[in-house]
Image (cartoon, rainbow, N blue to C red; front, side, top):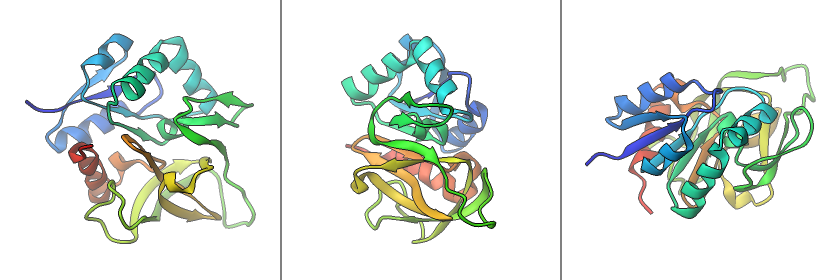
Length: 208
């Protein structure tokens, strides 16, 4: 039986692009907007494009935040957050005020500093990512691989061991994080061609 990958729909993600990328790797997928449906997923993907405050509000108002907590923290379902999805996993976000996130990573989501004229926000386009030596998500990729980014905020982890890969854009920031079965990328693997597909494949193949 194939693994069923649930793509969480809270109205703020490029769901079809993510679905297409996963299905190109042979995964069975379902777009899940009903919190009860999350119980059927073997793996979850939390995509997202937009602002932290609106994203966490929608997750809470729809009941998806509670359902995600039960799935990820209760049943230990592996999950991959993408872009805003990664940021929502933080303890707090500072975009448009201060807002509590899901709290799966001990860190804050803050704006990228603009300390030179070369740093323009949002950070859009391809940039090099340097993974840790033993990173699961980047297995089989070169020591420096390029990925596609679209963001102005980034997750600052208090525990550096949570950072799976880093990227330089004015400052060094977390391009990917991991805590046990919880994975996340600031870049968009579904838009990052072969390198991105390899990251998605590594997530699909990972076993505890």
